[in-house]
Image (cartoon, rainbow, N blue to C red; front, top):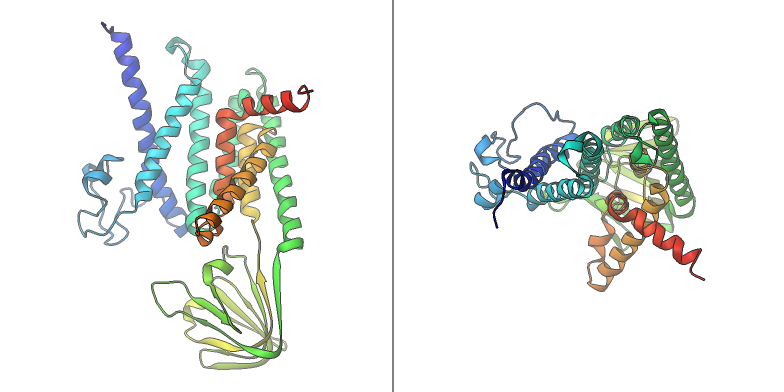
Length: 386
């Protein structure tokens, strides 16, 4: 079968779209590593090895290919390179191609299908970077959520079809995007606040007082909080900077200082001790000894935080209000199934440590590719099924 020049160029373009996605995925790896560490994504301009900090030359930074050829090791210091870098590049490439496959049409009509495709490429890039940052650090940076919402508003003004408006109604697209973002923020904010009331704290009362301490037996591992006969890993208590452990102490020792009859607030990065009218603040990096006897302990126990609400706000700004309840429901179902599978396979700790952000991202992706069909099927079964 003979192929003409148009067929060859069209086939080549499919490969180019995938390669563009992997290249963007390589940049997203930079964002995922640097953004939560308050590092510039532009300086240094070239990627570097986190272990030896040597900059990586261009020929050793080819998406997918370099990770395989280097056998997942740094060429300079042989430090292992996480498989996550390969996964992010591959995932971005596949999603970029899937969006291209869903939206592309005749090349003489690229002005019609090109803008929606570009906007959705930006959207999935935000979903990927936000999800992996949330997995690694239990945070969703404002530059992702608020910056992404701004991008969603602009995209919906440019391409009103993203939020269900006709292509000529740009201002209606912007208004719908803003309203959908507000619905996304408000709906999950309500869930967060109700969750705080119902499950936000776990209270322990001890009579008589019990020993309490924070230790770090292995410097390469997070600290451990011990009280009574219980030990808790640091990451199981503190998932975000705002998480706070409230302690009522009979006595407390911080380094060489001793406090009697006080209350203390322990955060991820600092300790506040209240003794009468005095408040003492200790950065945890300066604390080498922390122990005492306590009569009450309140542990934070929140399923999600405001970062998740801001993340859903971004989703609403790009995809419209119908996507919001769908994403919440899909994320909840996926999270429940993940917890069940983790329990069945004996990996409960693994499932419990996945934050809600990646589930929201996965729910939004399902909407992006199959949401309309699923919604129409559901309506046909519930309304017309009889």
